[in-house]
Length: 210
Image (cartoon, rainbow, N blue to C red; front, side, top):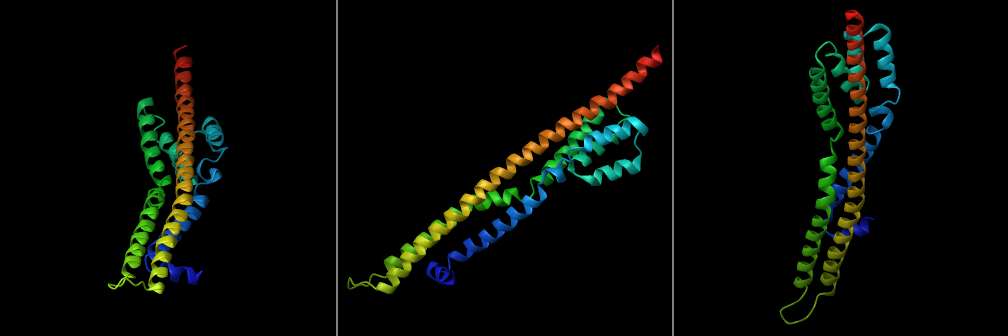
């Protein structure tokens, strides 16, 4: 491996740095964007059960907000459960935007690496071509060692750039789609909570009117 890095020349170092960052981001996002951690499947049912049985207080809401991103969105709605429906909905939407922003953390960097890696490889290719042209002496002779080194720089950097870009782009798309799916599920859960909370209130009003 070290021999390959030597043959690829100094332009390979930015690519190696980009690859290390990409691998770290992929591991971090894979651990962070787990379904059980973002949208626990039973959380909404638990919240609805607690709300129906005993209502919610500040301690319950604070604990819910710290549970997960979905809990944070639901907590924003419960903090405004006594407000009109549109106020509760706006609070949930504001919390949802903040949660979505946090879920997309580091994805821009991963997407940038996917785009920039081939360009860094192309830069190494240009450096290699300059090395190749520099191997030509004024008398028309060629320095074989310099020629071989220039070819190595050109080819290795191009290959490294593509090799880094492909998995980075695949994982970027995968994580982006995963975040979008989580956001949709949180929106659905929040809408269900709004319907239940305000449906109960309307039911109480109807019984009171009778």
